[in-house]
Image 1 (cartoon, one colour):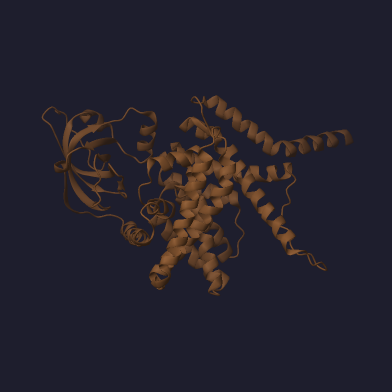
Image 2 (cartoon, rainbow, N blue to C red; image 1 turned 90 degrees about the horizontal axis):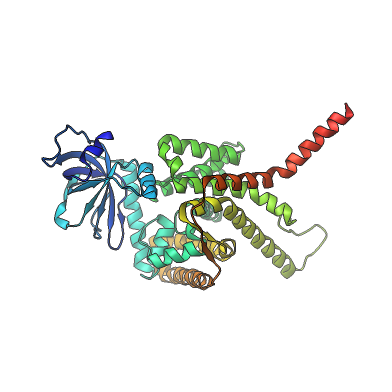
Length: 447
């Protein structure tokens, strides 16, 4: 809204509605407010209409008794941030300005407003689930588990920095990895319950939609949820789903919902990482001559079990490593461009972290199920979750103590980013291009 500039750095009194889940941290609470009414100081002479505009209210204290859909009266000064990264984030959220609240008297609850009932119910469900987890999981680990499962809780800064340093910060934000693991857990549970495959896929389809809402409708989760559900839908209606079509569909739907997402680091990293995994991993497997399928028992032979187990374990580990390398190679220039560092150890870290995160999410789901159905068994599963989280933090701490894990890099020029991706493109398609040129030459010579 162009009118926002007319009241920049001016004191205002506004009323508005909280239109997204509040981000409650230890010393601050962030609220996205949709303005309903606004009053200005006498210094504002021009007519200004800001009804419907969004502002980010940065409440400089923790306010836990505040929820989505509530209406508040705020007093403060409207500001338009100048920081480039922060401005990009605000545009992505369609936020016009910020307002700082330093005094509890300057934020007053005035009632309930009309909001999306699905989101409201989902966030209430999220609170019930996270409260149940907090009741059983150690206070040292419950914020980490809540963040990994439902994007809930405040992770201490030292843990966030440690995970970023070793290149596994993606496990702290709900992303494609989490959605795939959660959908896999649902499918396994339905299989154990002997539910027919198409019905189990249909249930999982619905549960993934609920999970996307519960985790706050964030871009990486929406993208992953759309892609997983397109594959599930393909099986339900007996149609094969192409991963590139699924990715393009997810991208298009997100941009139709919010075009500003295109300029967000999270959106770009989310899609480039998936593309890199799909396109680069097969080339790496060919380069290292990695078998495409896992070893299986051959007809007429009785393989030695330890040998078979060892080979399968080695192959799975190799695949996890190459997928991590592909994701690292694809996201590297964007990470440097936006965050200014390289985590050299990321593919190795993921070898330990991804299996642990899979176990943590699975055991977290089992813990929630046990709390609701078999509460007498909950302490046992809580002990398993606590141990796995302890192990995750301990391994991450050991890796982060190595001196060569991260390097600070000056901000990259966009030209270098373009050249890098051109080189990656040639790496992926060079053999195909070589065959095409050879075919054209042979065709010309035959003529």
